[in-house]
Length: 366
Image 1: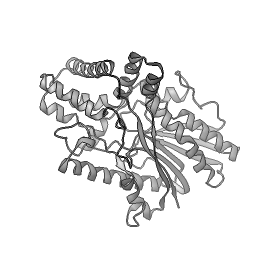
Image 2: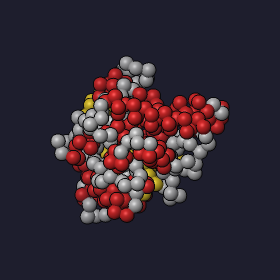
Image 3: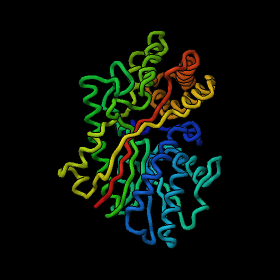
Image 4: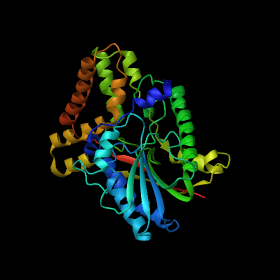
């Protein structure tokens, strides 16, 4: 297995529906994007008798159920004879068994399946790094809080766990890899979309004020990650090599970086007709921090915040531990890490949280 695939395989969200249960904020982000989705649909030609939708980077699909339901209902309002297909795509290590149960309403999540006439769910074994469906298959594509993950880790960061703390050549390596990934993602989507098709992407970003996920004026979440792991190095719980291997393969684009390939006539996506219709940034408050400000229950705050953080970074941190360690040793280290973070929030909750900072984009294929 090559390095690129191996690294992508390490990126997994919590399984068994735990991702959507833990990430209330991710659902809030999609709910806020739903009017943009409906507006994009309304700006298209009347749906034909066949309409195909893709949700890319869907994790367990729980966070987007309501949005997909609204989109399907609107398609039927525009053309009651339309038969719709919803294609769920994520990377190969995704918990597709859990996804199928959630989509079919076999968990605590309320699904659209069985409630929208002539709407059919399918699962793609591909990912958004690749072309997931044949040329000109999709009428509509959607992705939220997914495309900040890189197809591979360009390098380890010497003194931080995330590119927001990288410097010099290490930062440049992340920026270059992210640029290539983004152009490739757009090129794939341009091929998949039918002419006249639309796409709404909701991606983590660094906004004009320099804000990004977990860094909106309080305690910097990524610096907290880094601080705890450095403590573990000093305490001999992990090695220097393990600390460096825990670098998260993510990149948060600026608005200028998102727009660049869509405005360049020389890029493949532009040549294939993909155009940016609109882009804006918005911050969605951390739901656990909002509840804490309202009710002052610090334990409830910590009990909500840490699982949502854990749901998306645990697989990477665990994969950074040396292969010579037993699974029991790895579990003990990971548990100690999140317990330490939990205690930090209990001891001094002010400023902690995970506000979501996204770029909301509408694109079309001409």
